[in-house]
Amino acid sequence: MTANPTKNHDSGKKAVRASIRAARDSMDAATRAELSGKLADTVLGYLTQSTGIVRKVAAYTSSPGEPDTSKLLDALVDEGIEVFLPVCEPDFALSWAAFTPGMEFQRSTLAPVMEPAGPRLGTEIFDDINTLIIPALAIDEQGLRLGQGGGYYDRFLPLIEDSPVRVAAIVYDNEYVPAGSFPVAEHDQPVDLVFTPAEVHQII
Image 1: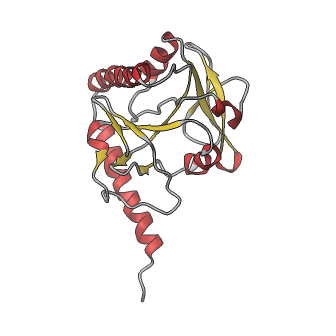
Image 2: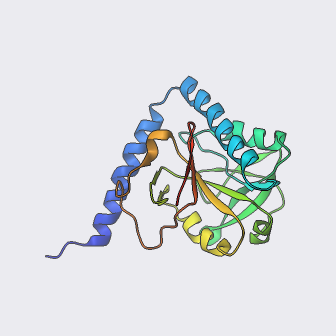
């Protein structure tokens, strides 16, 4: 009997995802909070020193277990940067809503995430957005991303490939790994940057 490569690929990803999630879940609240602050400093330091004036950024609201983006979102707004967050739509599509600190959030009916309650915007906003920051479980040195498995960003990123936006992912420092550390598929979309609490990795 011939082995099924797709099945092996999927089971390999599931195993890596389970290992990373277990390590994230074991992190204590104090460490998580400390790394959240460092992450905000790393991202803001990069954006304020990069070429051009950054006025608009798309990011995301972290779920429990993920690197905490709450301090980052507030810090971006404090810096005068407009922030947009994703909203899950049917057929694994994404729309976007403007973020303001203290705004109302609601649980998505399509995914285990919290979403901003507000007018929804489309891909047209990415004509003016400098950086899109997305979640990941791991990123390898080629910029290939291990996501949560929902496929929302793999479907969305091709829609903005002609926009002048750099795609960045957030992971913990030990989740930026050598190439080949996890299985990848043909449709997996690479990122341009990796933000960790300690540093910025630019994918060449």
